[in-house]
Length: 272
Image (cartoon, rainbow, N blue to C red; front, side):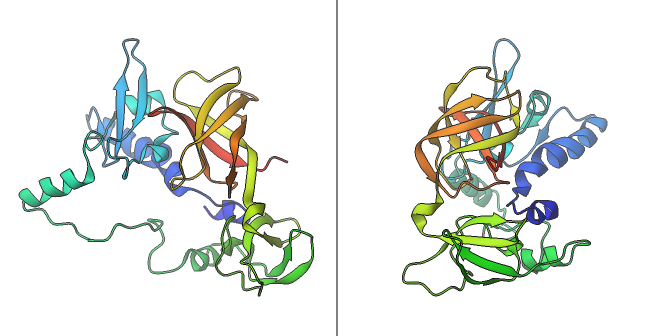
């Protein structure tokens, strides 16, 4: 998490946690106790085909679908996973809980990073060993210096708040240049990208060897976009979008879909 910010990227901790901690360390421990499956509350579905291969699908509740965060699970992990809520809607789960006299510990759904409590992520990063915030200059897309920043780790591509540079139209973060310690800002149209590079891809099934049409989601809150994947190797590909996408952010997860099935996912990486 800290290293990603240090490198000018915006990490996705949940997509790291699921394969390495929940379905890594915790699953291994559960199996050592004699368990056959590890059940979690993800809104997603698993299906096994006649050949014995496992497939990951979106949860029935489109509003709560969390399959995006599970795109890096392997066949073995899916074999030992159980998602009881996958065929249910959140409203049904709440109704069942009420009927059984269960009350939630908190009434609001948390959107925070689970390991950062009672502080901002900027303060958390500043407290990490070896992490030193570096103030620098803010420039526009023409390279003109228009202000100063207190550290690139406080910004992510597409961000609008906190730039503090007066302008007739709002500025958005376009690029984080760690070599020069420069924050580049521009107009909303400057956020559009027609392609991106994806690395360390986990293909849940067999990886493609030829270009293929897919749908790609470049962040959890975005919709899947029609795209063409051009494999560069088993775990690297160039994704070209049918329509340019906004705020494609290095460090975030790119997840691939065909219909409701999740084919896999990797990390968005700078093209150069």
